[in-house]
Length: 115
Image (cartoon, rainbow, N blue to C red):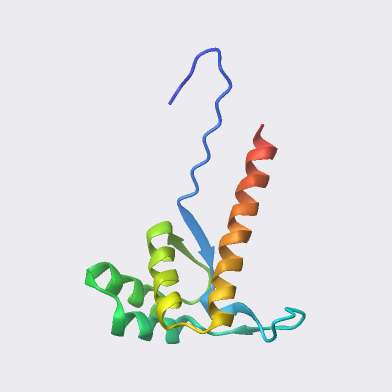
């Protein structure tokens, strides 16, 4: 979209980069200590058993074959959050929410820098 004579900013962040082989999870409610856990294979197996349709299958394969940081779409991340909210442990749900909050913070910083 082009606007002549107007300042426009449009931020579209279609992907989140996440390494589910090094997922930061807190080990207590005080969130003072954390560990990096390899969640990719377990998450892939869980989605394989519960996700519906070809997109769920594709996401399970993507996670299973991941070797490090991968790009995940909003739709994929939403599928992961839905799985976590149904079958996940609270520390895993917290880890995913932290990732989403970090992404929002990065988006805001990018927007402010571009203005």
